Length: 461
Ligand code: ADP
Ligand code: MG
Image (cartoon, protein in one colour):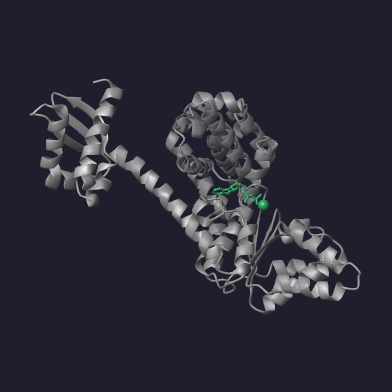
């Protein structure tokens, strides 16, 4: 039977089955897919193991009768097969439905009280914990944010989240807001960009006959809440009045034991406009940093986007994007969005070839070679390039060698064997060095600074 003919034939059988079988069985019938009709045997595939067993056990006679009636062949019968990949597709669809349902429920909950409805309107629905991929670069910040969301104003107050642009600060901060609105709707949450706060203050404090009233409204708006989320504090103005005002907001909330969460692209002490008084207040609680995600995390982030959509993709296409957009998650997502939009519009799958064509990133990292990495690393440590590649021991040269190995792996994605050849070492030695730096990076500031600066010198970012 031709494919189309087969599909039509099955549709007919299905219609008849639905008409005849009890309603509680219908959910097992709808997902059945036809895979063939040969010598009177109609093969159906399902991703529901329970569906298969139930239909086989209790309804096979009725189903066979329907088939005999429609096909006119007295020997024909139905065989149902369970298929794991069909199960996966089904799970994906179910997940999507669940997500939609939870979003609808979320909106309903948000409407429960006016303040939260307003703050919900200020939050981006995408920026929830559920959509935040946890990796080595953000797991500490994520844990802190989750802890604040679960028990506001108990442990980490204020929570100060800092890191370069596009690394997830706003996402994580808003996730706290969403979590609270959903799980704790009695609490009032307010999200504000520093800029908006400042503008609001300026327009209300302007001299007029209503200044006192306006300022009282302003103060109420920012202090009559349980959780305040202030985004991008580095944009604070140095004007004395503004500083005094934000300090007043901070102190009022803090003294009422309300949660304060702040983000910034740098540490408080590195914000030149900040007064010492505010700086020490911001440093009082917990400061957590978001750093650059590694390859696995970058891949997981775009894989999540791809899996949440209907797009069919090649794993290699996602790997290509994750390899080439290393500086900033916003750019990484942008690249994925561009490639996937192109695939969708032209009705193709997102293949490696297509990703390369659309993004033309000329393998942004391919001009980074083992040679370049070792050269820059040896310059950085002021040691001889032959020593890095050779065997001399000693703390400094070993550290430099391990860092060069680590960067060769991270930035070129070449195999350990390739790198081992280059350094003329065993590949287990290379793996060991890579692992060692990967772990040190999390706890040793000198190592993380060195890596960041060497990467900068390599113009990776
Ligand atoms: P920042 O505020 O630090 O500049 P954002 O929070 O705006 O960065 O993040 C930039 C983009 O990257 C957003 O679309 C955000 O959803 C996404 N993003 C950042 N970190 C993650 C993560 N860990 N998992 C999933 N998406 C992320
Ligand atoms: Mg931001």
